[in-house]
Amino acid sequence: MAASSSSVHGVGVTHETGTSFHDKLNSRWHERALRLFMVVVLGHWAEHLAQATQIYILGWPRPQANGVLGLWYPWLVGSEVLHYGYAVVMLIGIWTLRKGFTGVSRKWWTAALVIQFWHHIEHALLQGQVLFHHNILGSPIPLSFLQIAFPTSRVEIHLFYNAVVFVPMVIGMYYHMFPPADEEPSYACTCALRRSEAGAAA
Image (cartoon, helix red, strand yellow):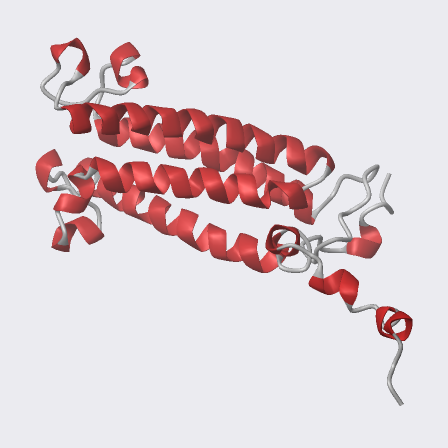
């Protein structure tokens, strides 16, 4: 006997198949997606911290302090395409996973998004100078806005920008996993720890 269309719709599979990839990333896949994203972020952090260690602790000359990957591929450190590409990946990642955050955690995650957008503009400026073979202010090297305001090495600027984006991300993730007492955890994903205790403490 053939099943009617109404009985098929009653099974409840149409809602799941109609969910977009972006919705899934911010609901049942949110925890997994955040973990994967943080592996990328922490890997990038490790490179910058390795470079800072080579300069400030090991005393290496700056041209030789290229992080870990830069030891084998020195062109990576000087490639504006690579730095701009990572800035775009970060911007897309933070924006894509923002929908899964709620309440105070979303405010902190949004702060990271805004700062990363500016960071991306800085890298776009650097990339533009390389593409057009013209550095602003007649500088021998491409300059970012922050470097114009505070003349310093690119190493310190990268550490600063990564820190000011990373800190609100971490705070946002903390409040996402441990929602404040007066805030319901997001039941769309499995990120929140101690769900039963989220609203217990005053």
